[in-house]
Image 1 (tube, helix red, strand yellow):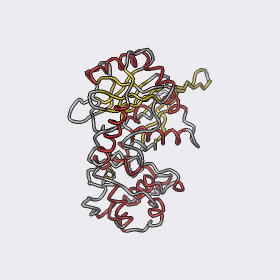
Image 2 (image 1 turned 30 degrees about the horizontal axis):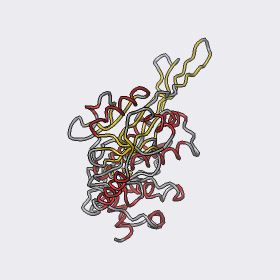
Image 3 (image 1 turned 120 degrees about the vertical axis):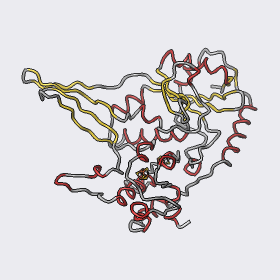
Image 4 (image 1 turned 180 degrees about the vertical axis):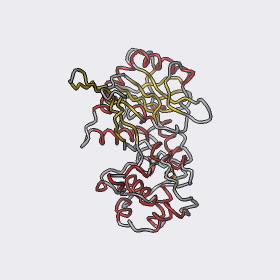
Amino acid sequence: MKALIIEKNSMNILLERFLEEYRVFGPTKPGSDSTFDEIKSIEQLHLDYISTVLPPKKFFLPPNETLFSFNIKNGKFTTKEIRPDEKILILGIHPCDVHALLKLDKFFSGDFNDLYYQNRRKNSAIIALNCVEPSEHSFCRSLGTGPFLNEGYDILLTDVGTNYLIEIGTSTGKRLVKGLNLTNASEEDFHEKERRLKLMEKKFKKSMNISWLPKIARENLDHDIWFDLGERGGVAGSFPCLSCGSCTFVCPTCYCYEVYDAVDLSLKSGTRNRELDSCQLLEYAEVALGGNFRRDRKDRIHHWMLCKFGAAAGGKNSSCVGCGRCIRVCPSKIDITEVAKALRRG
Ligand code: SF4
Ligand code: SF4
């Protein structure tokens, strides 16, 4: 199908079409920061955002959710699964966050077949938006996860001046624009897209060289940097890690969670729930009889960095997409790109 264009001030045409079929979530700007929230009218939508504090991961892996309820009645034990089935559309999701979802897709449909996550993904549509202005902390370009997207979208929008260029990625995307009175894109629109990509690539302030990084990280398990990060500070001006867990909670690819039961006072009914967990927290690696595999902060931040560098799980699962959120929120000014540089010695 040919690509289309839509005038920026006619975006309500697209939104109204999406709202016929889906609950729509997109970037809003309630205060100084942008956030993904429900969009019911075009006035709420702020597509010219740089980054959001929390990634759109929250729509697919909520911070907490009930998995099923259970009940004992007349001596009989029954369970009722609470399977998400709502149709949602994420509008204006940036390339790094789409790549994060692709990584989560692999995790939740590999060894761990997570039907809750999968159902949400199956019932969703992704309307991605290429970035034309990087955040001061992002480095997606080094990781091949941005600033422009080649996969993972139903529809892809690119700001080409007064219009958005609309490219279709799937049959869902095709269906969503069918019958709308939109103009075909011209060759100039694609030239403008190319021009903006080149401009954008020059704007990044951060980068991370990932070649050999998993191997380097694995072979430097006793490097002083882990002690500096956990206890002493001083990695490119950082303070010691506070183990606050903020970096993991804002990370679009962190998927660790905890499962617990909430039982009512009669002990006859309850719910099984899960909530996001963080490997930076002391309790994360706690086991029976007070044992803890990662009691020291240096071991916890070390473990997290190894995971992000792709050095955990046999180096197969690099889970950084370069969004820069962890750098932005860290109260101790710990910067994953500086840690990579220090490990590589430059
Ligand atoms: S590690 Fe940091 S930069 Fe990388 S994906 Fe997570 S939050 Fe983004
Ligand atoms: S946000 Fe910074 S201080 Fe908090 S756990 Fe992460 S690295 Fe440590």
